[in-house]
Image 1 (cartoon, rainbow, N blue to C red):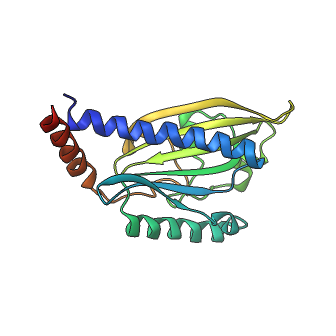
Image 2: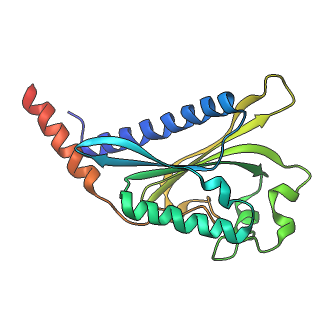
Length: 199
């Protein structure tokens, strides 16, 4: 019989893989993806995914992006998710961890606007899919290749679940989920006991 920790990790990976595949499908169907946040929550003893849409309207200026972060944190406080995924198109640049640590201030703002990947000559257009629990994060970057027709998506880089304090994922849209909504372990324990009693 699987332990609660094994089932917890399994459910997080199922959520992660499902969101990545759903994002790729949405990109091909719509020609792109707007910023969106997904939340894995327990409702009526079932795992469901809640969605926060409409964020794209707040992505015109840096101050609007800060408002979007506050809305996402408020959404998390209301929904009490076990895990979240934030999806957005953007620009990426390959950097060392040392270079990356010098890019942002303590609030997730670029220290120098010329450091933005969008301002770089060697930028790469990507879909960023950032995942969080209260204490872990993971990220997948999917490269958008517009040099071919139809436009192709290529897995570019990914970082599996790591402790947030060890994560190299940084910036304004990181650390959005800070509370530990521990209902997941209770739900898994109940589910495992039901399955065990059925056998």
